[in-house]
Amino acid sequence: MISIERDPERARIASDLFRDCDHVEVLHGDWQRIAEYGPYDLLVLDGGGQAKGDGTTDPARLLAVGGHVVIDDFTPTTTWPPHFKGASDHARLRWLGHPELRAAELRLATDLSVIVGAHLPRKLS
Image (cartoon, rainbow, N blue to C red; front, side):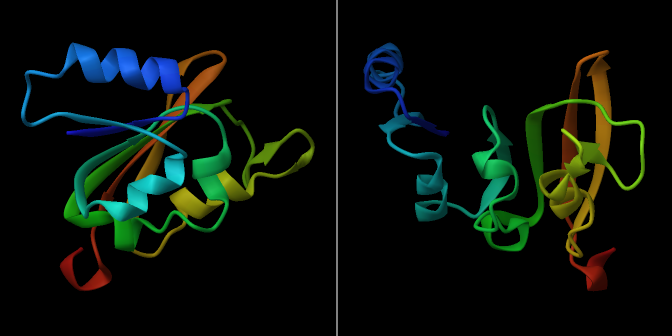
């Protein structure tokens, strides 16, 4: 398991917590460091919108075939195509419409949803 934490103190605390677990590595840095590792069987993108749709997070590159992704902290949408803050929600559309990702949005609360998906290239789906 690899965890990347942008706050240096949180990274230090988490690293200390898992210091005796050889299969856990906690790194300090920007979320884009996920590209240094993988491909992932499970990738959880937790937190702000940067990893959601800035164009650098490509599921086909980050996930193993059959790997899964969970992206949290979306505001539920009731429109299609989805909108957020009055504009087209490009981040949500990027994950839901990626040609190698079979994904769905799940509403967890009135103000929270997640996208879950599996990397399944067309030839495997």
